[in-house]
Length: 577
Image (cartoon, rainbow, N blue to C red; front, side):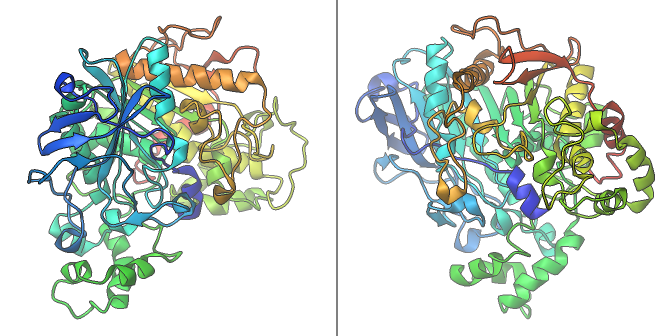
């Protein structure tokens, strides 16, 4: 997918730096649950963590769930840990992030040896088995990690306790960029496709075997992510043609869906990029080029990967295995894991994914067929698509109620920019959100849909409520942890009205409540007067999260841009997804 644009959109995260995660356990009574040195006994041995008195939480940070993917295990599917720890494992600091290429890596150490997870549990629940929320960070599948302070899990865990629905939160790492998604005929032939998704899958299996030791209920796991992390949740919902392996009982997708946000490419299409890597690694004469790449020094291959043409070029392929086929076909047939979901998107996703310089209809038409957003379609479809996205102000984003129709956009946007942004936001994120909720409804499975409509501090009006902006609210990160100059961002709540903090508390608590018992409405301390978040099957309605409205949340019919979004859904296979 396109890379720089999708990068903005598929940001992902990690656990927080302030409080650190620890792993609760059914062995808690023998293992110092809530003590200064909490200890658990998992299948590979004894693990100790840290207790944070300020939050009354235990943190287990940097717990390995796979063998290090280095040396002979580089560019191979992840391997389970098949040994016992020689001594007690001190899980008191985050592991390095997986090697990636983008702003999310700034300020954080990276390493090939990165397949670790973090567990954050509330203290004081020794005799209970708590539900688990498993965070999968985004970042376009080429950046991000579990150390990112913007994804501090302590806040949502603390909220879960306050609302009477305590949960354990876990964040999992996975290989990204070519380290996790290298594709070619050689890779396909070796059976090592989509390694990053398999990393996630192995982490979920690890939790089934070990989360009870931390006080978690393995039957009550919710997988949860944003952007590429939300897309990852979607891939697990449809993995192995929708086979239910009992790894989770619910899913949360923030700006990502079971249908790919881009168009699938094949290993043959990736082959030229792979060949460039091989040539620059001096492996072109090797009988087994993939095996040769496993022995190239890290510094050499990392330098090759860290280029604009290679770093963010890699995405999953349909391999007939973990990704069995185009998931639009699976949703139509009901071939997905039928568990409750939250699935939502932001109002102005298209300002992150669409091009600028859209001065005429011809400019708009030209970009429809290009791989600029990651989702592209053949030229023969353009005329009917333009009809489905007419130059009508009521369909534009931001909508005329927020930005007048006759406003002049600054350079380099162009007078047709808002029309284009409506399409690109729909084709990448919003249409497939609606399609997923409709599929869940058709099969009688609860879905909760949302539209996030609150522009945080620091974003200009022309950007609107773009991709990623809900994250600080879901994590209740009202102090702006991790938002700083290094990441070209500021605290989303800086100098904003109190309603912004109130919305963050409401959203974060709703997420925690859903993780606890699949009910995002019924919890202690819910903001007075807030209407219930409707199940999508009951009226096909979204909840709108809006800190600037009379009510922080209100339902709306999910009917905006009806003809355009339906056109995209009807042409899913033409988009190769």
